[in-house]
Image (spheres, rainbow, N blue to C red):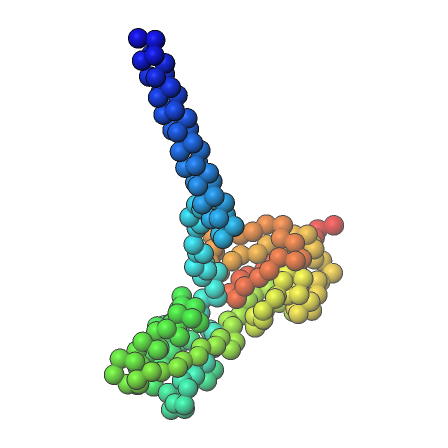
Length: 210
């Protein structure tokens, strides 16, 4: 019985040792694969988020009073230059008639014209759209030359005041209200000289009583 018992114990010890060697080999293999994955991808092997499409919500939107040019490559008869957006929000385009463009970005208008021309007129139209002149912004109150002015990129409160002849003698330079065309019911109070303005905005310079 003693010999049999020792034999059984020996077999068990041999089996346990073999199992530990196998487990260690498997763990080492997994660690190696993970290490290789990190080395190749610079990550722990987890899926990385894909790049999101650029947000186009901040693109300039064409509106009444803007002037646009639409160029169709090698098709001079289908190109228009500096056409002003009419009061009904449209532009007249050769073959296509009146196109409603208000609320569209240059990219969206380009896509619209391309799709319409490709539908029975041109095989592969190449279209370019540019906003040539922007609608007016307005400045009133205590400036020397109040009125409507053509918008240019990079315009700020300080520059708009300068274009309007500067502050009048009675101007309250810290009392300036900016009303966004897109938010007519939400005037912005105490704007700074560096506040950016957009086409259609209305700037009011208050009067000082001291």
